[in-house]
Structure formats: C-alpha cells, structure tokens
Amino acid sequence: MRTIDFVPKIVDDMFVVRILMDDYDIQKPVVFSITARRNDGTYLTENLTYPDPNFDYEGNVRVDFFGMSKPHFAQVINVKVNGEEIKNYYTPTEAIENTQSRYDDSIIRYNDNINLNHIELDFVVLNTGDPKLLQIADTSAWGAISERRAIIDITIPGKEEPVTFYLAKNMINTFTSPVLGLNCETQGSCGVEYLDLPDGIYDISITGSPSKYKISHKYLKTDRIRLDIDKLWVKASILCDNRDDDLLEKIEEIEYCLASAHANVRLGNTREAHDLIDKANQIIDIANNCINC
Image 1: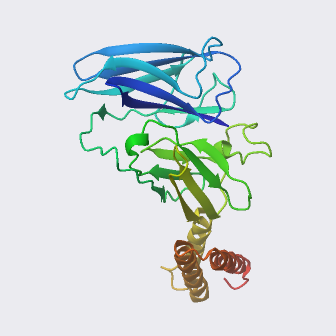
Image 2: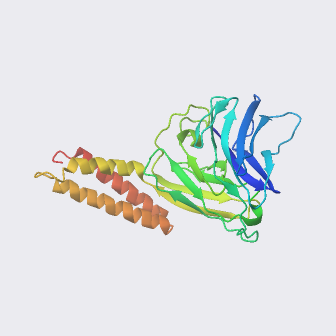
C-alpha cells in the first residue's frame, strides 16, 4: 500500500509543499492540485503532473507557492489528486491504485527558536486503544537536516524484516494493516480493509540523513488483549449479587502480567515480556473456557 503525504514547509523564504511517497514508482501520470493561503488574503492553487519523464525528481517532489516573511503564516487548505479531494488524514485514493493519501493543514510560520546545530531524534508511540491503528509522533529536533528526508522502520511482531516508510517529520504518522502490508502476503497488493494489528513488541526506529542520526524504541501493543479483558469485566457481573470472584482474580492476574510486561519492555527485557504476554493470553483462554465462570 503506497502512502502519500503533502507536507507544508518554508524553504528559502518560500512556502512549499513537499510530496512524500514511500514508493515513487507511479506508472500512470496523475495531477496533484494543491491550494494554499497566506494570512494577507493571498490564495493560490498550483498543479503538478507526476511523473514527468523530462524531469528527474530524485525523490524530491515539491510545489512552490508564495514568498514568506516573518509577519506571514500560511497553510494548505485543499488537495486533489486527479480531481479527487484528499482529506487531512489517511484515506484511500482511488486515482492511484493501492494508495492512501493525506495532507497536513498545519499553520506554517517562521520559527526564530530553531537552533540549526541542535539535532536530536526522538519519537513517541501513542496509546490509541484501537487495535487497528499504530500511531507514532515524531518529536525530533531536526536542526540543519530538517529539509532532508528521513525514514521510519517498523518490525512487526512475528516478522523478521522491517517495513520502511518515509517519515512525516514532527507529525503523527499513522499506520494501518494495508499500509503495513498485513492484508496479504505481498505488501501493498491488496485492498484497504482495516484489520487488527497484532499485539506484541514492535521494534521501531527513525533515521535521518546522514544515517548517523538514528534512534530506536520498542513498543508493546496490547490493544487486542485489552478488548478481551473488557469482555471479561462484563462477564464478571461486578455489580450483581452473584458476581464472579474467581473471574475477578483472573482479571487481576492478567493485569499484573500486562503491567510487568510493559515494565520489562521499557527496561529492554524482551524475552520476559514475551513470556508474560503469553501467560496473560493463557489466563484469558482459561477464563473464557471456565465452566463455572
């Protein structure tokens, strides 16, 4: 599943929109139509036909708009691909097969506080509670390499090789099963049905340019287990006279396992975390199959 991000920037005193794709190999030409506005009332729509056989983009596809100075701020207000309107969150793009697109409508202005010598990479995985989503917020200070491309590698539980995407800097990067290639054996060759992502330890890293700037974190996703626990809470009938105390004890034991698993991941003890997640799942199975529960 190809992803396309339309990201506004200020480059050399110009408001520009970078078009970032995790796969730039689009066979049939498409027309990107982008509308932006500046706070002095200037509106401008620019069109770009991609790919252009007479131009070597080298992965740097951008659309230039108007000049910027310190009193100005600007934002993207509309994006279309072959006339199809794109949202500001990932949605299927019918104009390009197996593609999801989004645009960033953040207000962009000069930031006098940027220290070009300060480069420090970091990110946070957001706890959405949704088993269908993996959201990663880039919190890096990119300094002098802010205009260079960066990538994000995600190793999914049960997989040996990571999947790689271009990183939308200082934004929330959202990943779903079609984007991660989990809907079928060949990444990106299936539809856009959103499946639950597997629970387990995700190994995530972001890498700048040059590649010496890199940071990695492990994240334990337990959203599916959490939904199973919710069902057990309902089953326990805690407000009823005949509440199931044995089931409540099992829920408590599951919670202990999850809390310990998260602690072990934070401390780098992945083997212990795997064992604890397995134990939690075993207790859930026992609770669901218990005749007296």
